[in-house]
Length: 171
Image (cartoon, rainbow, N blue to C red; front, top):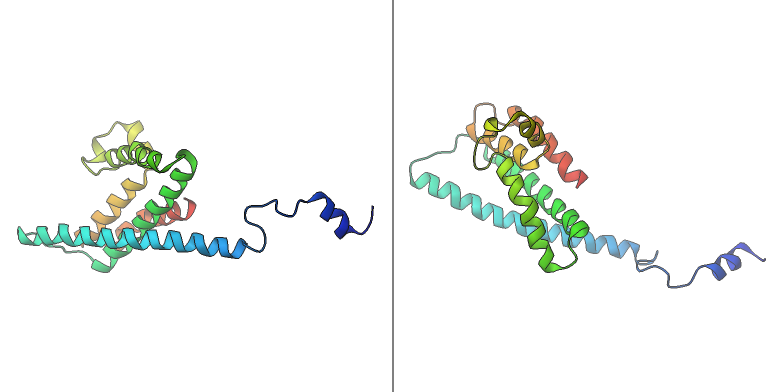
């Protein structure tokens, strides 16, 4: 018995939490810095890959008719979705650094295959086509295709863009 503060102090060990109230703000700053730096690093890599792909395309006579700004926005959304999904997958299924590569490959490759990266998803059986609607790679491919064609651009891609935003936010 006694004053509430003293009673509570007897039941709570002083160093019970890894991240206590004094470190809570610093913890979120560090998390934001790590996620931000990884996102920026992946964005730089993706931009380099995009320059390489479009540079080769121009060298062989191809051209880009779509919105460069729209393509950049979709690229940034894709990077955000992949970085956040990578953190979720790594935290849930990987116990060490080595496990992350296998886990990402085990999940990422089927997403690429079923997302329309290597063949049109219209050729899939109806059940797989329906399941593909939940695949973020499917929406990335559709959004990039709509923007790259240049006919309707972001207006045609908005449902896919909304789903990418939701996927990035939920992951």
